[in-house]
Length: 90
Image 1 (cartoon, rainbow, N blue to C red):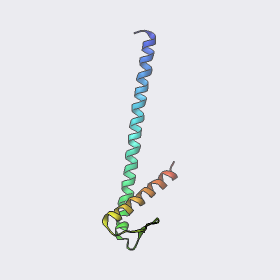
Image 2: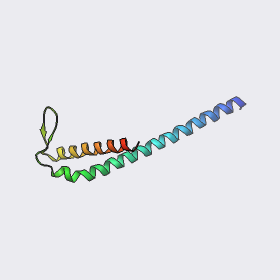
Image 3: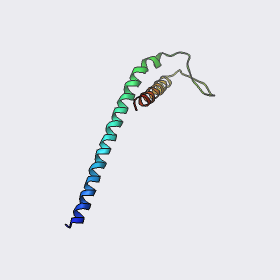
Image 4: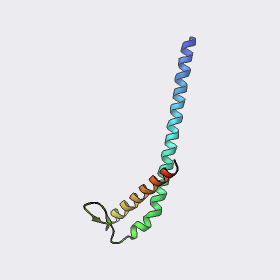
């Protein structure tokens, strides 16, 4: 290999290593985010399961009656908690 080829190979190798490191870091961040959302969901689920007389807002207010509705409410709360956490910690 010539000197230029070695330099090009080294540069490409370093770019690959950097890309792999960035992918691993992004994966770790995503797993941490998912774990935080899961903890928030599990924390608010008992309260969401006991609400009575609540509705989802908007123009077409839909009452929260079914288990699916209650899980959707808990998911919304978990989304909100995660958004607040990320906003406060970035």
